[in-house]
Length: 487
Image (cartoon, rainbow, N blue to C red; front, side, top):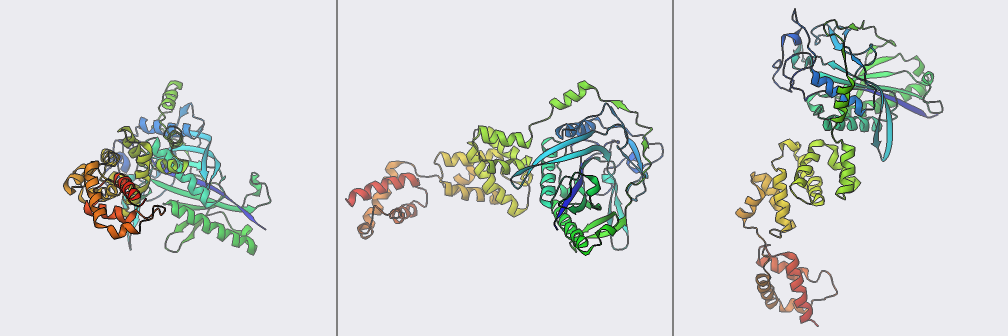
């Protein structure tokens, strides 16, 4: 008998593009210095009063609109009461039980392995993040920089059926958050975390009937997309084995964690169907109305998203779907391409450089486009040098490498290295005639029907000019002379 996986995700994404935290005036920015970005409210000192960050609310609502969610008429915040060492107040300000949070009952379409998939959104809510804990050998230290950072929690229905679909959805959502200007969505900075819910069921049962669902296992705080993939695949195998052994139905609903070292999920605790967090409305933040005018203003401010850019690249620039997909995957890469094209660079040539040499360089050196020395202006200049026949395409690759190695602009590299091509036909003809005069024996074996017959002669021209002769001019001139000599 076969089995079907039912996978739901709880995706947490920090809103990194506000100046301050969600309820305090502390700076909202990533810092490697512990406890640098904190205020009294983040530490839950007596007498504190939270003040809602309007920009964070706006960004959260914008995200809910893109996810096709319903928006509320009024906004509430609630206290979620539970104790955890890095939660200073002993409760978290979040949204849960009141009419609806930032958004509810939406859906997202995304691509996975060449097909379009849809996942239903149960809800999207805005809350404050907790501090971060580092567990050392015999002690734990807490960094409160993250306490109070605005956090979007996205909860899906269990519509995903594989690790591939789960990762494709997460990558899609990361792109959405980046294009909306909500977050860098950088998992290396802890800005994206994920809880994964996995169960399996007999494949011949109705996947929409809740009574057919298997026992849900929650895997907490998976911090990378690779980890999500591995955790899901491990859980599917583990639960399938329990099914085949006949012990699956005895498995309690539980919470586990993903262990990178052992590449396995590890039992943490049993979990009942509902945990009583004793939610109640935050008394220090009165409910406030979201006016139709403000909601419409937010809707109109939604920028061009990755899907729209992809279609524009294909329709306006004539780029392939494959190339367009690569360009729009990371917003900053797409922005680099856009800025290069705005300077007048041919879109296809700019695409070839960005998707080829530049991405290869970034991946090999494990850096981001922000750390890349070459700017769109420099790339434009480099492409223009090639288009104007100042240098050859082969020399262009050499200039690219030297530009990054020496931290100099392409135009300066070409001047310093004396790399300008010889394009004057009379100068090239002198060199061609010299080569023909020196290669009498080679001319005897020249075969005009052999496409490679000219390679040797062109090589001699390039050797004499140290690669500066325009290849197409030299080729055309050499072929014409040789063909006339061997008639």
